[in-house]
Amino acid sequence: MLLEKLSLFNTKKEFFTFVLACGFILTYALLIEYNNYKNLTKFDSQIVYATVLKQYEKTKLTKKGKEKTYQVLKLKSEQGFSFYSTAKKSFPNAKGKKLKLEIWAGKITFYQYLTSFYAFSKIIYTYQTPTLKQNLNSFISSQHTDNDITNIYQALYTATPLETHLQNKFSYLGISHLLAISGFHLGVLSALLFFLLRTPYKFLQNRYFPFRSYKVDSFIIISILLLAYLLFLDSPASLLRAFVMLVIGFVLYDRGYKIISMQTLLLTAILILSFFPRLFFSLGFWLSIFGVFYIFLFLIHFKHLSKIWQFILVPIWVYIMMLPLSLFIFENFSIYHPLSIIWTSLFTIFYPLSILLHLIGFGDLLDSVLLWLLNLNIKTHTISISWHVGILFILTSFLAIRNLFFTYLLSVFAMFIFIYSIYYIT
Image (cartoon, rainbow, N blue to C red; front, side):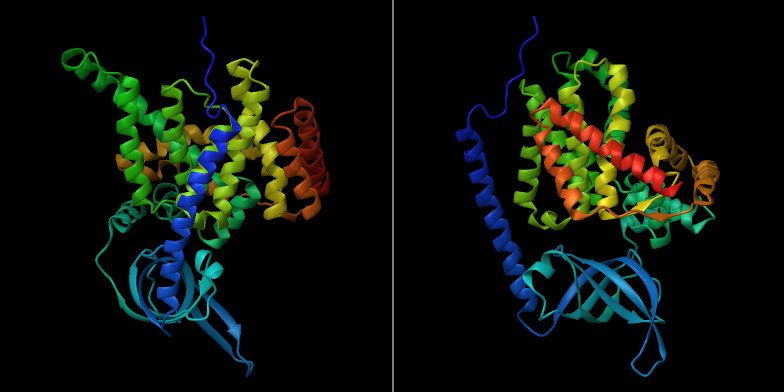
């Protein structure tokens, strides 16, 4: 006899008690951020230590009509805030390096502090000692001759920001989510680690600790490894969401609670936002939340389907559901965009295989595949969705949680936008 899974919150009182506790945590986290903001803006200038995330040249016309070229830097400070600044054209490439700067940020608002802002700066010192991430990026770079290919693999393994032209390329191909380390990558890595640990663990278990559970012990080991990887990458929003959800999901599963439920997703989102209020303004975080939302929506309403059909239909469903949000935000589309369903499925093979090839020194074996993608002649199109349609789609999505009729209505809604997009570009 199958036991019924327990619900996380049995009463509204339990749920509101949880929300109230998270409210206190959020308030405390915001007070800490506000105190850091006041310290940053207390004086005209402050000394800041920051890492260069992006660096590129920009040219503009001065008031006298002359061209002026300079370097634009996107930086992330040790305190966690991100900001833009500029440097002279002659400033050498410092991408990934740590800088000591004096910045003038006295007039920024608290909202700008939590999101991103521009500040005049004076670079005092550039640290030349390579970090662990820089060493890993150098190791990746040594196996490739093409800079774009190098940048792609660095984005995949070390969360190095993609160059703008590559971002645009992958956006039109509909596979930007594959290059931004997220829950999808975490799932592949978890499955790979689970498989690799099984044989040595079973060997030791049979001889030394037969009373232990491989399920529990492997989860603890994998979680520690993934947490180390998360901290090494400086906690990207989508990966942080996935890691917290992995931990919460296992704890609930181990205690007999439902995992595939909107309560689990809501619990994860509330907890993360309570501890990390900056993520309120992270587009990547919200897109990852909606991605999981639509996966859960399918599994909740179509759980009667066989595992094979679920495996086939979930990628198609998620693509169709996320397309309206993608068009609403990015407005990018091409004839190759729907093929992202296939690319996403193939990526589950490509990703672990590429890791193995880099570890044994043959990371360039798959370069021809990526070069083929980059050399595709893509006729790009801009398709705009009004905010009225976007809000209506999101509201219908929420209504679909409880009612199968709205799920079918949502499907028709999304399919209409997909067909319109195909018709628009042909």
